[in-house]
Amino acid sequence: MARPTPLSGFPEWLPADRIVEQHVLAALQRTFELHGFAGIETRAVEPLDQLLRKGETSKEVYVLRRLQEDTPWTTAAEAVDAARAADDRQLGLHFDLTVPFARYVLENAGHLAFPFKRYQVQKVWRGERPQDGRFREFVQADIDVVGAGELPGHYEVELPLVIAEALGSLASIGMPPVRIMVNNRRVAEGFYRGLGLDDVDAVLRSIDKLDKIGPDAVAELLVAEAAATPEQATACLDLAAISGADTGVVDRVRDLAARHGVVSDLLETGLGELRALVAAAAQRAPGVVVADLRIARGLDYYTGSVYETVLVGHEGLGSICSGGRYDTLASDGATTYPGVGLSVGVSRLVSRLLSAGLVRASRSVPSAVVVAVTSEDTRAVSDAVATALRARGIPVEVAPTAAKFGKQIRYADRRGVPFVWFPGLPAGTADDGSTVGATADQVKDIRSGEQVEADPATWEPPAADRWPQVVPAV
Image 1 (cartoon, helix red, strand yellow):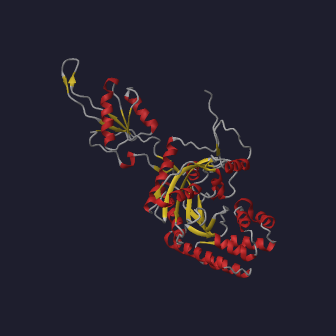
Image 2 (cartoon, helix red, strand yellow):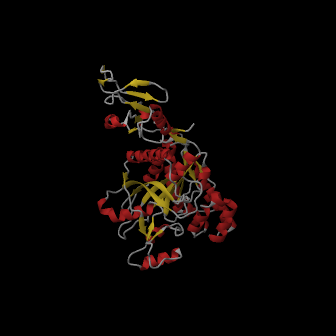
Image 3 (cartoon, one colour):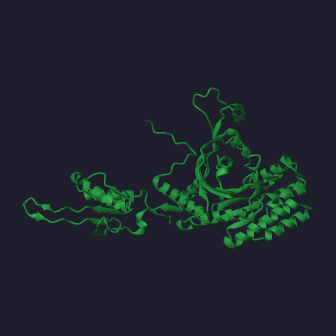
């Protein structure tokens, strides 16, 4: 078989890197559960017409069809038309976890207790151009709270603080601090409409491109696509320039609105919600959560608070966690299920931790001990030692061959395993007929060279050696 050609955008971690990913996932899950979020998993596929409810995503969705499908489509529009016409609706791989979650809530509403708090860790797929931190297949970790009919605003405060705690718990392994930037769509919409701009979605899409194309190009977009005058475009950019870690940002927005004659109840509602979020964050996570009025989140279903998160010192990577409040994504016609959620891009985060040399695993295998094999005739003795150690929760492997002990030590060293166990010999008779007493088992720390007698029923490795550790790389 010829050597396979790698597929870009589909990360496959080496064993040591996978340990780092699992550590990150475990830290997130532990924090989510501490705050009462229940874990769920949804199917990998959704009807295509449902996936496309989230906005401009048709170019990113991977369509799922059989190899022998009778009528393959050449464009996404043809696929959508066919999906809506067919009895057996066309399926696509989910590109995020929010749309599947909305469907899950609708299907299981009668079995859920509201407000329903869930976390979900799964792979998702997006057909976009791979680049640094951007993949076609990647792992997300989401948390959401959904209510039936209504959802109190304090959850918009709680969720970013849960994320701040979860990501902050990774500081001990060498992860940089994070900054969670927050805005409120009611602030933006109230301000834009107060200026006389009715195509709010077009304004948001343009503002969402600030980091990519800069303010001058965004101003041109606002004129061309949102029918803004140059003065209105300048006012929108002035709003986007406001940021801060305290409630003074609210006063600055009000001053800007007054200068432009903007009067809006929606703006005032949004500013009240933004003030509550910033004030609570200043007490519980000082310096982590900041108001940033350029955060737009161009997806069209957000209705309240919106969030984006960056690694401090690695802002060029883009957001590693984003989300917001949504009031109308899930509805069965009789009841609407408003929610708020954030999604951590685990693969993007892990890829930067590894590529920047920020963290490492202490070893690439779980094993803390390699049990040496004296001879193939006595392999059962080594297997018995391994069984006794595993019964006490110590990860162990038995040497693959009964080679010289030096070679077996080198085998352990190559794998990063810290200890080699040498089984003792039972009592017996020497070649000259004399009696030979039994010898005790010994265990060797191959890092220090220290070798001591040991009993598999009582010996314990140091706590830091029992399992691989994720530690700062420097």
